[in-house]
Amino acid sequence: MSQTNSIIYVDNLNSGYGNSHILFGVDFEAKENEITIIVGPNGSGKSTLLKSIFGLCDVYSGNISYDDKIITGLAPHEVARKKIAYLPQINNVFVNLTIKENLTMASYTLDSSTQSQRLPEIFETFPILKKYETSKANILSGGERQMLAMAMALIRQPKVMLFDEPTASLSPKLADEVLSKIKQIRDDYGITVILVEQNVKRALKMGDYVYLLANGKGVFKGKSEELLAHPELGKLYLGIN
Image (cartoon, rainbow, N blue to C red; front, side, top):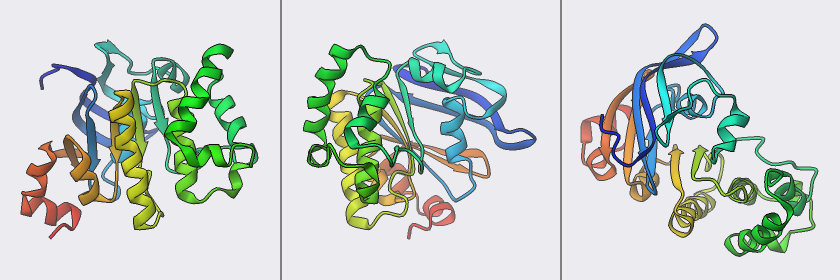
């Protein structure tokens, strides 16, 4: 695989959790400022790929590099300091803190002047959060909580954002809003996005490049429109007719 312009590069990755081997020889790359989509049936290893990049899995063999430097085996807090943000599907905000407190907690690595500069920017990108600034996060809807989780990641000025099924359990309308906001983040901030998503057709329309995983192995990589135009693969693995 070519490493041209790749900010994240995964080479022959075997990983899992303890004795549970999930990914088998997976190759993957994400280019700068692109949205790379990871799709596949349940249990295919999509989330495990994100968690491997972020240091939340056991890597048995293979390498993960970021900006041409090996990050395999680093702890999650070390990966985060390299400007990579990971947004898990659930438990991604502090529900008993206010929106402003959540954002302050998330920006603990920034000095106070940068922190105070970032807040207005964040509220401009997520006006709904400004409205609820002093309210506790437990009053937010599912879609609004995803917006807050995104804002908490964004305030730390990441270069790469890893999203694990951000639209799970959201209504189609809210799911569209969340995916549109992810695209806006890429466009406005030049952030590289890696997105695991069940809403396959919508995700493929916004993605630049796609990887299809099945049974812990890569079975397709290419442009989104190529996968949409590949009736056998779409039907076999994704239920696309």
